Figure 1: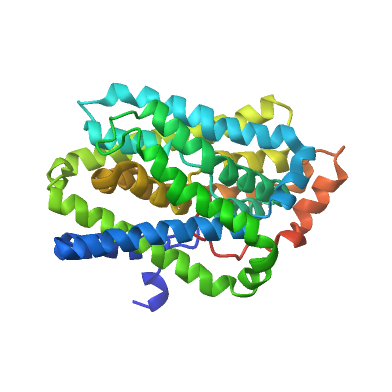
Figure 2: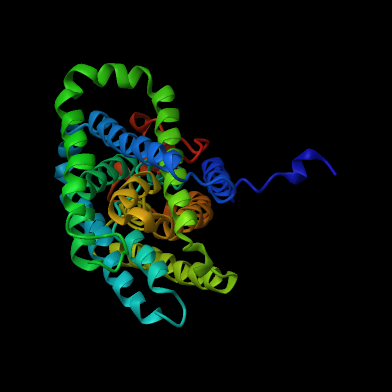
Length: 357
C-alpha cells in the first residue's frame, strides 16, 4: 500500500493542533499536576491566558474592522447568528439533561454556543468556496472583538453557577486576566504592531503553546478532582450527536436565512462560514477563567465541535467552489470578479491550510 493511500482525503482535514490537544489531554490523564506542581501549572496557565489576550489585542486592527461597517447588514447578521441564535439553541439543549447529557457536559455544550466565531478558518473556507473574503475578514474580526465582552456577560447570565466553579467573582477574574491585557495590547499596538506582524509565525507557536499549557492545567485539575468518571462512551456519543445537530441547524440557518434576507451568493458564503463556527483559540482560555476546576469538562464539547466544524465546512467549501459561474447574480459584476480570482488582498487561497481558530 502506497503512502498516499494512508493519508486522509484533502476534503477531510484533521487539524494537527487537535492531535496536539489530544496528546496534551493524554499527558494530563497519565501525569496530572498535583500539589506544588499544580500551583506552578495554575500560575503559568494564568499568565499564559493574560499573554494570549494581550497578543489578541495587539493583533486586532480595530481601524480595519471598523472600515468594514459599510457592510453593516452582513456583520450584524453574523453577530446575531453567533450571539443570539447559537445561545438560543444551546438553551434548548437543556432538555437533554439528564437523560442524554450530564449537567456538566451541558454546561460545556452551552458554553461553546457563547464563544465568538473563528477568523482564520472562516477566511480560508470562504476563499475556497469563492465567496466574499473581505466580508469574512471583517465579520470574524467583529465577532472576536465582541466576544471579548459578550461571552463573559452571556456566561454570567445563562450559566450562573451551573458551571461548577463559575461564580460572580469570575467577572473580576475576567476583567484582570482577559479585558485588561486585551486593552493593553490595543493601546500598545501602535508601537508593537510592526514587531508582531514581522514575527507572526513565531508568535503563532507561542499562542498554541500557551493554549496547550492552559489545557494541561485544566485537565490535570479535573483528573485530581475525579470528575472524568462522568464521561462514559455513551455520554460522549450523545454529545457528538447533539453537536452534529447543532452544527447542521446553524449551517442551514445561515445559508437559507441569508438568502431570505437578500444577500448574494458571495455574502451568503461569508455569513455561513463566519456565522456557524466557534473559536477554539478564544474559548479555551475563557473557559479556564470561567470554570476553574471544571474547565476540563467545559472545554471538551468545544474541542469536539471545533474538529467537526472543520471537517464539515471543508466538504461544503469544496462543493461551493464547483458552482458554475452562470449561477451568480448578473447584476453584481464585482461578485463575478471575486468568483474568478478570489480576493488578493485577503492572502487566502484555495490551497491555504485551515488554521485553528
